[in-house]
Length: 443
Image 1 (cartoon, rainbow, N blue to C red):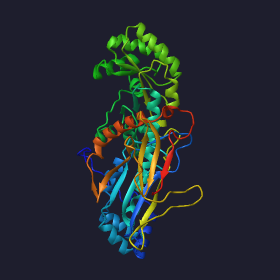
Image 2: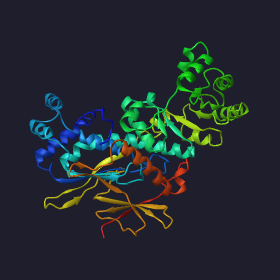
Image 3: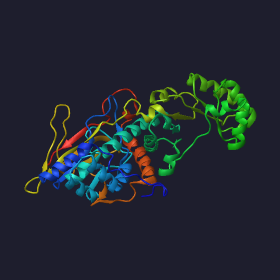
Image 4: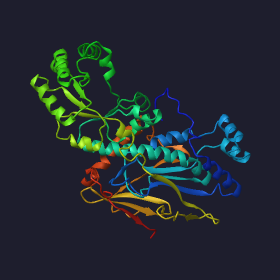
């Protein structure tokens, strides 16, 4: 794992729900705990009106599973509070995940019933991971999906993640990571830069201008410290005065101005004209202020160079969870053979059986369907793309799926995955999934 050498990953074993451990205790009591089982994480449906989702969080899950062990203090807590009995405590004391994990690569697009993560192990080992797996996948995939919609709307203009102050401090790090996977250029979050090697950016807020006796003095201080390539915040007082002052001080080499309020479309247009009239043809305009994918799309015709996005991104832009579930789909029967199992509750149906998945592509390399084989690999005409990767084998983590390398690979996978999907994925209007999900039963 190539995360920051100085960062110590916390234990993840108690990032779980009480009932995961009481199920474990009961399964140990019944003798079923060691039955070979297959659990699957998937979403029954996309958020209302969305046409696709983006997988994110897998790397964090894999990092977390390596630290999913129980310390003496944690075991004492479980015993002292009567969460589980002594037999279960003894089992947890020796826990290390020893099974296999497969799934979609981070950055991959997913659709209803895509088998995003598959865990094959004893029931006991897979059961205790459920809450941790879902908490990471649901949060990170929601952020990456929102980020993807925003970067699609931006049409190639850079997007900057700057939502740390609008969410929990650890969620902020995860959100920054997921945003970069979803196509964002950079983040303001330094911890995300430290842990995952993502690009960090930032200059100054309104408080810096207000600290000084005049806007001119604030600009002079920033330029003297950070150089003329910096971006000056232009709307603390009067925008036109600020732009003229910035140009007077920095000249045509001024890096950029940031607009954070008002009618951003009209304001960007006249600020661009003003900058050009003053000879600052290369000074960039960054806009912020409660942007979402719809606001970004509305700014498409405006002379904007980059977007800073905060609140709407880190809250999923209306879909704060991916609504994924983690279900037992196959388990060992009395004869040692695997038995498909499925939940049949109304509106909460799952599909039993170990899954295999591919992206069906036409002769032009465009995606036409998500094909899920139940108990077998779907037919591949040689043009299709298998979707499942093996991340863990007998408890051993494969290289390349964690740390900063994983984030780079995920961002590349996202770009490639989006390129092969139909153009409908870029429409912000409500609609059905961009491609259908098709099941192939065992021949």
